[in-house]
Image 1 (cartoon, rainbow, N blue to C red):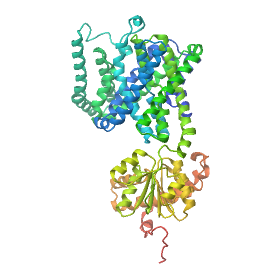
Image 2: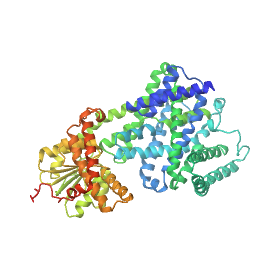
Image 3: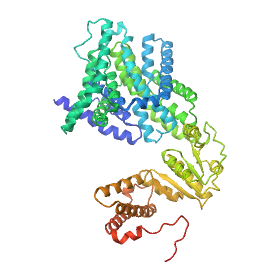
Image 4: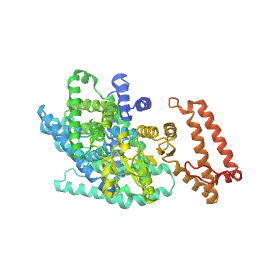
Length: 629
């Protein structure tokens, strides 16, 4: 017990310290876990040979990850993504496997080992790339969406890879492996001694049982358990579902990941989908984190130092090869400019599934242990270099691409009363309202896919970077009466507002802000009206809340209007004290004024009769002067 508690203390302590520090440094949680493992393993020697046994348990986190991936994949979603999923993802995995396999054979490896290495290196790091794209706000870009499609295909492709690897086993390596099933194996088998056709029937029956059970039995079971209103039992049932399916798959000689993935897809439309996700997610995160710690603890630094040239050479060679494949696919699928390089650099590393596949290849006597240890170093090093690739994209590629996009900006042949920069969800609504009321608009967007899509839809949209002064001039900046800035990139949005204000002091500018701090920046830049993305929807929800408490709808409307007016006035006053170099909670004058504004608002709202007339005062258009009574 003492030893177990000590190990738990060491692993948890390492994770709690290393992961937040890594995230603060922009390295991501996966690298944080790897670094934690390196520190408690090779550096401090607090853990040792027991990490291999723990790794077998932690691999169950991968099974849970594929269950959650399946939950996210409704058949309709898969169908809408089919072109990029199969085209980009399929070609990336297929071409990379072939090239890596050829390179490995050229270095003297047998065909089966070379193919296994190709499978391992064809995958990228879903955990690192998706997290980084989300943190940088690049997920909605063409490059981000294409990267997501490839990662999704890779996650799905792991399943047939796990099924294929045992077929590549080498008899001379049999004494090294643990047999199919690895850490999730069982002593019993339902297929032992059966003929090949009988094994096939048992496998098909098991898969059919998972699909039918997930579709017909899981819902009544979860409804019955949910009726007990015992949260912990529902969590236990969710874990039971995953464990039971994994156990069944192991009994019939199939991959546990395959079974749980299928169950996830079957349950994607279930009303209990979100509860299942929330219940499984913490276990998946902890087990995956534990898995990465054991990988970091198992890195053989002696092997790294003794083979430094080989390891670094293979790592760089792998990343260059994968980048070349990705760059070619980007051209083929018409990704241009920054999106092309984002797609290329983001996916150039090996991924966390590489650790799983390497462990699986050793267990199944496909790759010898010493070679697997060397390849594990290559996977780990390529992941450690990934943050540097994103820095390269931000500091070198993006500034150059901003000046020299791969696709030339469209020639703008129209003029309108309003210029709209950005045709995302926000800009689309504004454009529809203005057009519906008879105002001509000139719409600019930097996503080639968005522009082409809207033009096919009959909504005239021009491709180009709205932060370019010449493009804004061509769009009619001198003649327009209104500029709407509705793009995601806040730095570029601020550039647009500053330039427009310099050129047209009389122009009315409406800007979209993500949060309160962006509002302050836009005020300083010269915007007239700033709309926080979620503010209006939150105010409307507040009105519904007041009505739910029995306040008359007309009264509730007046109260939230009064709140909006006070908030708009307050945020203008706070903008004068806002300092981007000082955290808001450490800016004493800012905090003092914020408290005063809050008290003023509460006093005003509590004194309803005296302020109602003020709320209902006559509205005047911008620039009009109020008439004295």
